[in-house]
Amino acid sequence: MSQVLEQARKISIPTKQEEEKTRELADLLLNQVKNESSKYLEVVSVELGGSYAKGTWLRNQMDFDIFIKLKNDTDEKNFEDIGKKIGFNSMKKFKPRVRYSEHPYVEAEIKGTKVNVVPCYNVEKGQWKSAADRSSFHTRFILETFDEAKKNEVRLLKKFLKGIGIYGAEIAKEGFGGYVAEVLVHNYGSFLGVLEAASNFVQGQVIGNPTKKFETVLVLVDPIDSNRNLGTAISAQNVARFILASRAFLKKQSLSFFVGKKRTPNKKNLKNTLIVKFNYKWRSPDIIWGQVKRATTSLAGQLELGGFEVIRKAAVTDEESEAAMLFLLRLPVIEKFIVKNGPDVYRKSDSDTFILKNSKNIMTWIDENGRILSMQKREFYDAKKFLENLLKKKTLQSGIPSGIIPDIKRGFRVIRGDQAVSKSIKKALAEVTSTDGLVFSTGK
Image 1 (cartoon, one colour):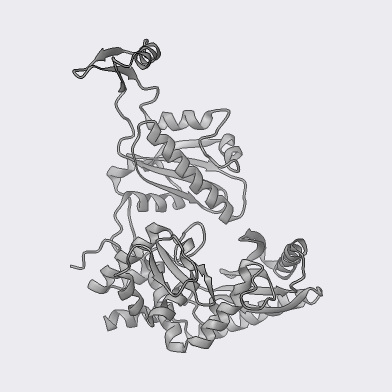
Image 2: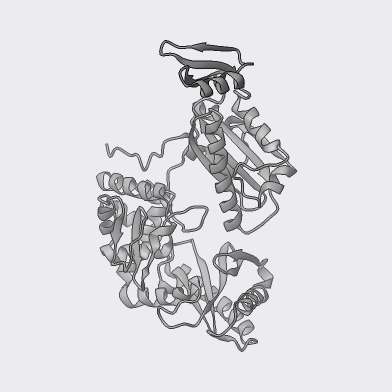
């Protein structure tokens, strides 16, 4: 145990040299935002937040969050406009883009490091006007309650979550964010304390003292806001993966839990996997991920109604121009004929209606119990053709978000899993068609 944890610490905790370089970059970026912010009377202050400010960032994995605090009486339009202007002007050398949470913010990338310039209100604790208002209070809470040793325990937990593929609160991941990792360590004291607790989580596990009832698989109360459940953004699937991975690691420790284990697609399952692939006009990753995930759920429902059993599904996008929906089916081609169950002959009106509706079927008969049955040929028994027909309809509905319908109508392809070539789709295929060797480790 101690040897694995020591190795994990070496790859999780930044070196002194890295800390110095990061500090220089942080000071540079902060000053750029401060200089731009000085042009606006509405701005009260500018400060660093996130994992860097708290001292819980991972080695070689640094993001900066810079918060612009605006006066409380700033109206929403000015709040958003000022935030975007400061973000774009301060990061103009680094190809800034607008991203969306509750309010828009600006994201840029400098030497592989993401920088988020986020507006928030300068509020008193508990008087939140925007979701970002809590961030400075989160930073203060961690700095006041964590010593260096505990910060490094957070780093271990983050690295573990990343290694098992569930780190990140964004819509794409629906996993455990950085602040969630910090709050878990706050509640259970250490990395191992968190894993020991997680291995015994129950359905609807409550961590902390909420002031109201929450209906999520995991309830994790924000220490600075007892009305806020940090578990809301975490999917039930990822909670389950965390529980199983925690149990597996405690049985048999391995550095693989911190660095990840490469997965390869199951070739047999690839043949039963269909991919709907299309290109889209660029938009915020949070938006396109949400749209593709909803469309995937909708198409899975349509496949089920068409008689195709969907074993697993997944949505994927490269966050640039390509998106895809993946469906692992029990059978991609099903039987050509279907038997429809009708009413018994004693229900005269229903019998007449059923006979009329099915008069052109292959065969209609009465079974041993006096019930009318009818055999008909399916309109579609090949799932590929079923999806192609569905997506080619002029009035494309099926619960697909209206935002991506124009993208699909510009062109799409339905291909088998073994025909995929793009990196992002191949990675998703590996997850959909194979067993997670870390989560399902037997400990032997």
